[in-house]
Length: 312
Length: 283
Figure 1: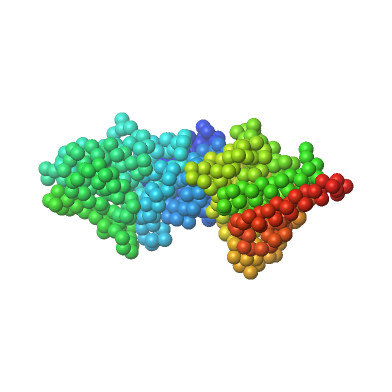
Figure 2: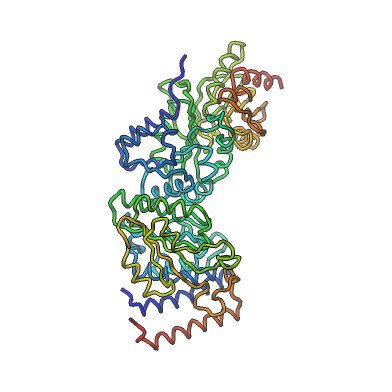
């Protein structure tokens, strides 16, 4: 099977289609229209793309001002800069002031693997989860991306969308249903559950297939929304399968894994549990897939993690 | 339309209320509220098209207080304009009150939550851009502190305001010369400030920011130039109107004790008597 498109491309295509019908949709970028695959958007709808230059703080503040005047604003910038450089603007001008900006973190996680840690965003889930009034969505494939962008336009609250730049596999049936806040069970299973988010759903699914071949039935959940977390879907998996592994392209601190662990502990749901993500150490260099493999976010790594977790 | 004389009387009334509110809450930013209150007075009573009845209208003028710590001045003016009752201000800084020590949208009449410095100008640029996009004629007024200008984000926003030709944006700088530690020029030198703003591309006017007549007259000329944002460098006195608070850094957020409060109110009453007795000062 060949990968489909990069989620970023689908984001840009979907947004263009929506913006052509809705003059209030605006894109604000920080010299990042190329990285955001928005060059065509800028050519076709020049009046709906506002270039701010390399000034992420200013970009988010301007986006909040536009949103306060009724615009449907997508503030698009590399996730590493958007959620660190402009964090105070996200906290105060968007979240606290409740202006429903759509914050779009592009080339997120270790998409820019070889460019080094300045360009990685392995902290974004953690910092944004701790800020009241920001919903967080990391689509796994083109289908989820399209659903997320469509849902974002009229989302009543501030929203963070996180996209990678590598072409990804389609994971869903065409009749799947995407709703912000509702995890999608990509495959049913009874022995072990992988709950993954964003571009790590794909390796989780392929690990699941390999484990199936070894007689281990795996449930695969795409938890595209980290906040609000679909607790029902999580708890159901914890009750119906024997072990649970979370997978994310994020620090093991403060992301999907810890969000799930907190829910399970407080619901007194105890089962073998493991968080797979980027460990708390200087991140190895390489491409996104090389970094994934290094830290076990791969078919082999996740099969091993599953066998160890089930045996624990 | 209030006369300049009536505006001057209002400034005295506002100063009394600011001190009373701060005294009652036992917290507040005294010096900065006193320095900027004449600007708010003129904006709300003689310039802006914004009042409780049209606050939901997309055509209203916008006011963003980037120097959010001087919120007591804003609360007092908004109460006077009828956005909420003056009595509600007795809850300032109290448990569960919406009237916290910096502006929030939970308080009627407030456009944007501020308090962290260096945020208001970018937000105002966004509001002004939206006005241009929609062909609306509203203006966006943003009040900046001078100490606040150390935040680099103000200069990012300035480049954008000029780049987009936002002549519907008016930045007012409350140039009182002081910040919490002391004189701005000793902490983080800003001068030559007017040259800096001009170099960034603003159409700049310098005024006495505690003189309501001067403020009104300069604000009537907005925009100073077509397709350029206007910037008013309002030279003010921190602690203005109270002799022992003027230009004393300690009054940045000091709360007057009983004696100081009584003395301050007496000074304002004296000023009021003098003003009422001298109508010929009216221009």
